[in-house]
Image 1 (spheres, one colour):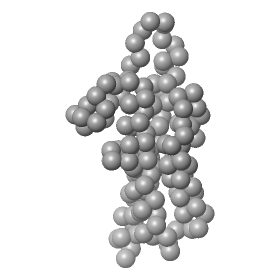
Image 2 (image 1 turned 180 degrees about the horizontal axis):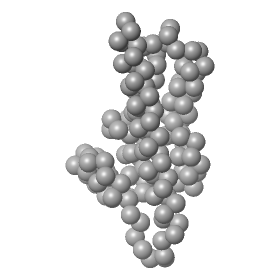
Image 3 (image 1 turned 45 degrees about the vertical axis):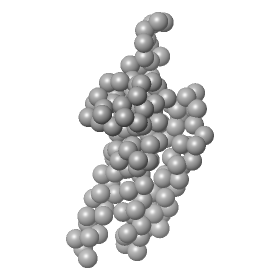
Length: 135
């Protein structure tokens, strides 16, 4: 039992950390774009290249536009390294040890997942910086 709990806590934290890193990754790119001179193409493809999942991205989305890359890295529940997929797995790990963790921890993980899931439905590019800062 202790091994199962330790494993679940480990993966819960890994998935939350991964979601945080992806959010930071995208937010940095959003901030860099603000400094680009007019007429310079936005650089979204390097974000996909860094993940090592370019073939998956190309198959699903084709062109590396801001909308496509953000959808892929943040909100694509079928892509296992997206923010929403990582938080879904973190939530599942938390649920499996719910009797062990505090109710506050469960509520935070659950609220975090639900916030990202809702944001996937209604996020606009103008609000993304604030969203990725929250994540």
